[in-house]
Length: 253
Image (cartoon, rainbow, N blue to C red):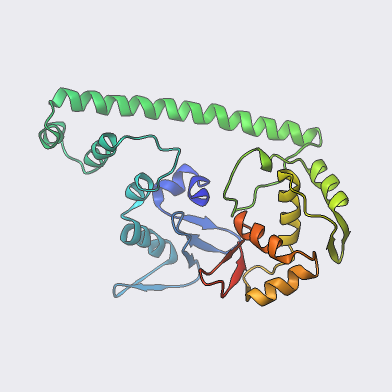
């Protein structure tokens, strides 16, 4: 869900985003990726990665609109009636046809269409103001040496625990690790901010793109801290690593 909610408006409307590091087009709903240098055979047709990603969104998720409306995101506050109305508007039906389908008057439909247009204007202005505020705040923090550390892509619970400055991170690292090379943890803190910093540093010991067995994960973590099971559990819980349902494989997010 977090991956979907972090996409910009253009990507949400297109149904895919481009990941520069992976050099692939990625579905913002399920995370399936399409290597930009590959050609994909879909339903007997050969497609570019961009087109394959777009078609994947249509076939797997019903298209960008359906994917968004059915995402369950807490940021979408549409009622069931509003969702139905939006889908009817998107289908291109006239106000009279929509009114007949819903059993209301055409004037009611026209009013609702006007209301949605006004909400679009409100959302655009609000987005512009808030993005400017966040950008200016970040610039001023960087100027003052208080830049926040970036939130990792797999984070599942976005709240104040991730509001950690680079200075705070450095201080925490020096306090909880007896050594960074090799990595040796003195104590696994119960405090949330410290926990985030600890897990972030430990996750850096995993190789991107590699799949680990549970035994390999345990061996890696044992070298860092005696309670490897706790480290493994929190790495998964906080979204730094993922695993198969049967725990047969683990990988870095």
